[in-house]
Image 1 (tube, helix red, strand yellow):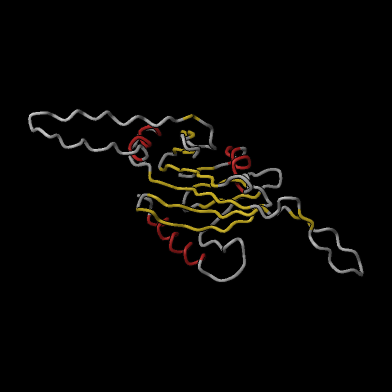
Image 2: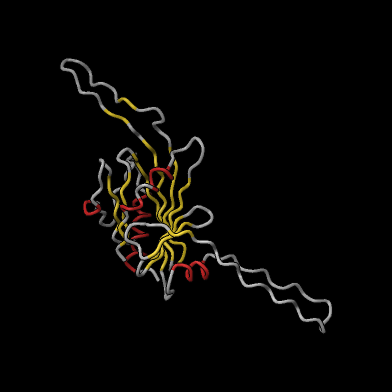
Amino acid sequence: MIPTRRILAIALFALVACQPGTNTHPVPSVVQIGADLHCTGGDHGFEDTQVGWGFCYPATWKYNERAQSISPTELDLTFDITDIPCASPSPVAGKASPRPVCSPGAGLFAFMIISTYSRGNFANLAAWVQANLTPPQPSPSPQPSPQVSPSPLPSPTPMTLVPIDWGNSTEAALLPDGRRIALTPHQVVILDLRSGQGLLDLETQMSKRLRTWKFVY
């Protein structure tokens, strides 16, 4: 099960999310530090010690964060992201402050969901996926005659996992649907990027920052 301190963080996150205002970075209810991620190229860092992971992201991204407890063993954090690549020209004495200059495509948005699960006693990533993500097999159909035994159902087909490198995770892979999954000593983390044509390209930006991830638990 996810530790009690993380369940408490859910309620605090929800309280923060309900506060009025236009701040695109809700005041965190738990300690969020990114300095030890050593982000480069002007990137910012997000690290939440309650859920046990952190990563670097582009400095032009602004986000709203929402938390949802799906079960005692699953916590989802959703990030609504907007890209605002704008720069403020230098002010000129005696003149009004110049308006920010934004790059084409400013205001594009998308969202990502980062799900954190308890690892349990599973020895490796494949075993966890087989037990938790493999679709259940259909039940056998009733047979018209009691003398005829139902045909045995085939075992569930193991999901194909493509190994990847993801921060300091113990093991990581790409799922068939495009999500990324990481195994740590005590948790399983799934990264689900939700964007598309005409939206902010999360895939390009996040895929090249996988190495910046730090898993704590």
